[in-house]
Length: 273
Image (cartoon, rainbow, N blue to C red):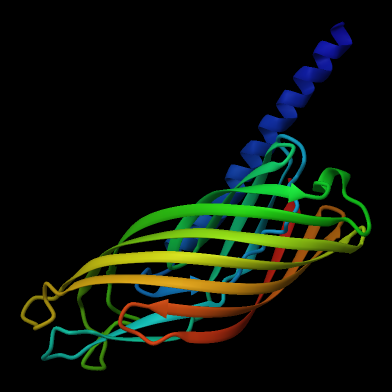
C-alpha cells in the first residue's frame, strides 16, 4: 500500500515537472515573438502538428521552427488616405510550439510566432494509435482547432511605408486568427512519420493609423483574410530529439488584394520533455 502511494506521488511530481518545463520552453517562443517588430502581417504556412497525440497525461514536447508563408504589405501614398495592399512572400520569421497530453486521444498545444497571434488549441486523434503505443505501419487521423488574438502598437519602419520612405507613425491594430485542420499520417518506420495536413486560417485585422499632419492620420484599416494550406510533412524521432520538415502550398485571400498561391518549405527542431 505504501509502495503504491509512493509511486502515485512520484508520478504526480513528474507530471508537474514536465508541465513546468513545457511552460518554460514556450516562454522562449514568447520571447522570440516579443523581440520582433509587429508591423508585418504574416500568415505562416507551417503546422508541425503531426496526426498523433501523446496518449498519456503530462507527456509533452516543444520545438523551435521556421514560419515561412505569405505577408500582406500595406503602402500609403503621402497625399491619399486610401492604402494599397499587396500579398507576397513573408520575410524570415521564427516561432515555436509546445504540446502536452491531456487524455488518451486529446492534446493541448500552444503555437507562438513572430508577427501573428499566439494560438491556443486542441488536437484530437480520430484514428490509429497515439505516440505512446505507435508502431511501424501505423496510420493516424487527427483534427485540430486553435484561436488567438493580439493587440499591437508598432512604429512604421518595415513593410508599411508612406510615399515609399520610412516614416515615424504608428499602426495600432487588433489581430485575431482561427485555425482548423485535418491531418493523416503513416509510419514507414517506427521512428519516421510522414503526414499530409490541410488547414484553413481565418484572420481579422482592425487598426487605426496615427501620423500627425498627414492625410493618412486617422485612416482605419479593416481586413479579413481566408487562407488554405495543403502540407506534406515528415517527422523523424531520434531518442528525445524530433526533426521536422514540411512543404506547403498556401492559397492566400485578403480583402482588397487578389488571391495568391505560394509553395513554401519549413523546418523545425524539437525535444521531448
